[in-house]
Length: 253
Ligand code: PGA
Image 1: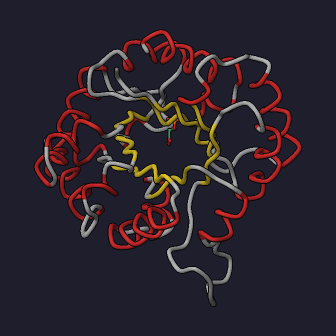
Image 2 (image 1 turned 30 degrees about the horizontal axis):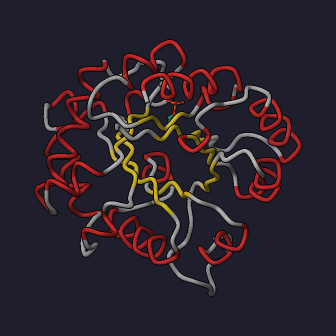
């Protein structure tokens, strides 16, 4: 059966009280496939959301971490800190972090290794800019990201990583990649992973699409054979929309 993970990326939205309200609204939607759903929230919301999600089966994630366990890294959050809260997932290498916070494939790789060691599932983001897409070199670019980000990670660990293909030109722009464009790149990424590891590893991986996914386009994206879910920004801030996207995955399961 096809695997799905519908992950909400709240980005820098929702104070603690607003987060509690959103989770209550989401719980009221009675999502039928909570094991296929998680929300990745700001650090300051993690404890509140963890408590609010108790007993629902919906997963919890952070949006970044540091790769060192502790030390003089003012303003950073370590994996042991996140582990103690009890998170399941952590987004790594989102294009906004790569663009605005100097995240590189090298730091992404270190973070992936540290998360895997801690038993937290990374959601690794890759994807090309509009400029690269217009040059027609998007596959070379994304393959380069995947190869660098997975450097030194063995097959058993690699299979635990969730990949989110997010074309930067589709994030928050309302411009979704067509289902065919999204499928083409997700299948291509799976092929790259099968090449690095083997077909069984490539086939087992969860590869999401992200970029303006919403209730209205979720089904046509999720029914593509190589798309195992979505990383959802804007639409994850509305309980109705997010629950509808989860519902589309439930129908296809
Ligand atoms: P969007 O964001 O759904 O608002 O386009 C997706 C993301 O950046 O993860």
